Length: 527
Image 1 (cartoon, rainbow, N blue to C red):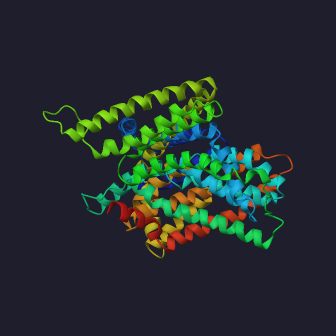
Image 2: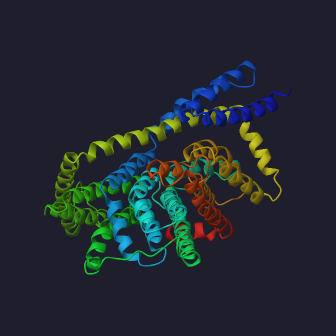
Image 3: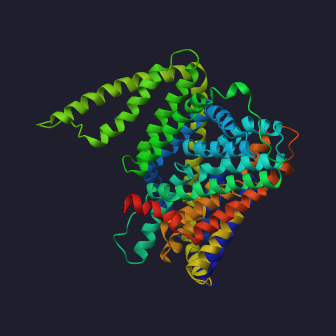
């Protein structure tokens, strides 16, 4: 047999073997690396793999260690876990329930809107689904909601953190697409390609995320009209009316301001994703300090620090604060003094918040969760690097390119096949595995066929969001099953999620039919 053909077949067998081993429950990172090394040595024995290719792993790992963008991952994780542990979600759910509860389906709409806010502030699907399952599922069942409607709403809204920025998925996807786009442009002879950044993906995914939120809400309103008994209104206690406005402001303004600060600083080009993530960490810590201090009259250091944090953004971006100059203009000197005072007040507020969350036991739990989640992501990334290198060394990228370019319909046909493959793999594999294994293989090929990288990234992100909802291994379903009461059956969860999976596919079709939904905002903001 021709060695090139044998290598390509062996690469496909390696891919299938990795999928089977993952389904057997073995750890993802060690599965990807172990299977790849086993097939590398098998290829060496057959004379179709050059073991010297593995020498490039050191440079790949060193590149990961030096990648400033990936520093945003543990920072966003810390921000999300801190907000989840500090009862922000509980306050949001209570307030939204008071606002919309009197409508048919109002409680469901509240859950979707809170899921949207948590998505924009945490980006961690597991934490969001578990928190909302613990807080809102008992309330929805008590209000008379159909268990299927309640479960589907919670699972779907909990996965919005995949597509609404800032999202860990978008950070990882943006880093991979950046390399894939450079590789594709070099293959096309363009040696000065336009860069694709995570900021572009954040901007591109915002409108599709809002479209999904709107589709979810329309479905709940339709269910309230079609089956009023499945989404009944919730009567508000008489004493709640007078205090509603202060409660809304108290619950919504602080997390909303944090989201605007983090996401706005990224989209307006005032900060990189890593810098904005660090701002988000400080803001989440201050919110947690305020939550712990509530009812004790000791929240003023937090509020002062929060005002200083917001003030520092225009000070840093609007003035030249460098003092190592021969002449410093008066306006810059005044701005530097104000910034210094803001830093002192911010440091004091952060110290107070740290002490409070440490005494309450929140800090230790948050730090441990952050380390566990971040370590999982990066170990999988390292294992996927081995897999990708061996796959290419066996010639797997060539057979993938040949198959995709031979599809009827050109770029559209190839894109349709890739989306179908990712949707199918989402039934069995986690989104991180798909991002690290599939995207580096198919991304360069699709981009050489003329597809817009931002649109491609948003399409992949929406498709990956669906992987959390599709049985039998949809992780959002498992998260909710773990906290749902015994009266809610697994079949209720599976049946409840079906309409939302169809809505996801509708959203995917809309973005495919109207690429401007993903490309308009990046063009307006950055071009």
